[in-house]
Length: 128
Image 1: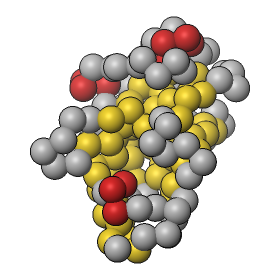
Image 2: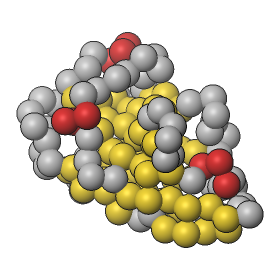
Image 3: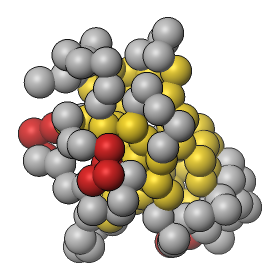
Image 4: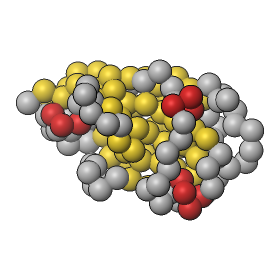
């Protein structure tokens, strides 16, 4: 199981930006599925974005498309989520996740890793 530690959350006003980071231990294969989920109190978790490391393939949810971008730095073992034009409805705990899902699952909007594959999370609060 990979070790994942998120950071970069905080409180920001609507329209602001944040960049989340997820430092992770080395993964056991040359390609891996990594991504971000979020969960607001009393709501179901939502897949925000995912990326198949070692390729250019990625997925971003329609709910955040054109505002959020996912990237990965292999040299730094770090996954990022750039969030611009934040809205109050983006307020949630954001979790990094990783597992060996195949590429088409990882980037097809169907990736659903076990909670055991998630990090502890970082809180994002957007005020109006």
